[in-house]
Image 1 (cartoon, one colour):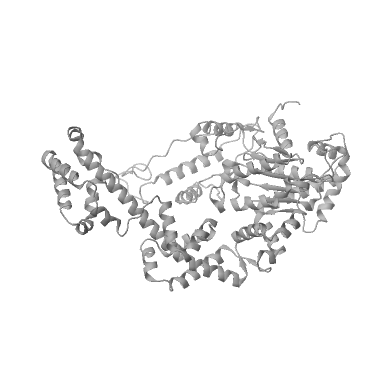
Image 2: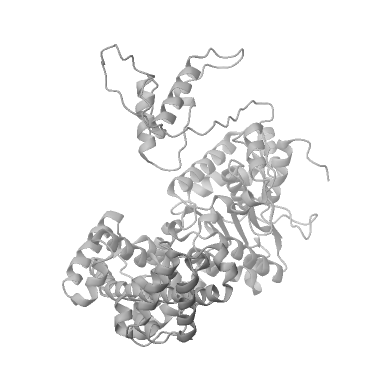
Length: 633
């Protein structure tokens, strides 16, 4: 085996290993490393004849029929791009001279004897009913539910519900049910959140598969639900009645606490003496009167931030001389802190219970309305497909699907939710068991997944990077138990960025604390290489923009003897940064190009921001003021 001598050779070696049609592969691919090309190469190699890894000198394994390959991507745009690039490649193969086609096949490790099959692939894909099965997982679920509506208990003529329609329907269901609910249930929520906040929480509950059990308990067994909520919040023993009254009634070793306060009253400085007198006065009352003044009692021990006062509010010197006195008062402070934590937990549990009791009828009305209108949401597609595949009577569905899929390809798996992973697992369960794992006429059935752990949009549409790691291990175990080939290559060569940019990225994430947030547990960040080593690049780290100084003027120091011709005001840090960027970009656009380079144009400049904010608007204004053309997305 020859070692790669350049970044291009390394990239080719990595992609050849990842696109091996005889192996199930889980690829970790960095940004710009050619994931789309890899997917296309994998599709091409699956559809073309290939060597048998167990008998290289024997007959070739026939290519897989295109209709038995399923490729699921994250977005419609990615699916369209993949389909277009695949069709373009197959179309070029039809007219390529034999020598150039042989070179193209050689780059894919496909024998040149497959030249005829390669030219025929274009027509074979075109003749495929519905074309290649390349699409989003939602589109696949939609087609599956339409194919098996009876088994999925779904209206076969369902329509997809857009977000605006869903928001409107949820608002109508909320308004209808709030009028029917008792005031005692709604008022605690109304005191804490607005109607807009309530709709946002209802939307989260509607999309959360983990809330279904809680909503069911809210309808049938509220006390059990409340107990579970309190346990989740760390409250093991819930006091009967008011926890504050219970805390005021039963003070452990109250006599020793009184003695400690009397000692402080006689020996402490004036401020501490005053506090001790007030505390003794509080202790002189009966429990109901104490409870009425609970805020004053907790204020003796806790700060405004809810933290325990240091040395019971006394000085360091006093705490050293009267250690036992301060310790006893601090002990009561720790009890008060625990009582306050219990109070907050009970309040939160009661509000959560009220929210769930409110949400249950609202979401039931919302779901009933959807069913009557024959509408389905995108999340419904996933959940109903998962239910269809896992239903005890779904053997017929799995049989029909198992006979139609030999290879599953998954793109952008770092943004796949746990429910979507379960669908992929159910679809491929027979790939690695019994006679379903291998067919002498078509080779082994395989799973291919490509993604990047550090690029996960955590929480978006249920994306969970931990599921990425867990399902990789699941597929690896399945492959090894079936004796199938398994590979986990990494694509570390970037075709997008130059060496200076990649060097900065590697330097930043070489620190363990920085790498912890973007790398898998127990794994170091891979070193990146550029496929464009000869091309230049530059990374500049600018100093932070200082905050506006009180009284600082907008444009220099005004002349006190000159009449003001325009408004003069202060500059915010956002505006200062926007002006600095606009001036720098305008100056760069006017710079003459270096020999052999082209003139920089506004379209060559890309500005990335974390989110749309006031700074973006300020930057657009500054660029337009500097006569720099600007377009926003």
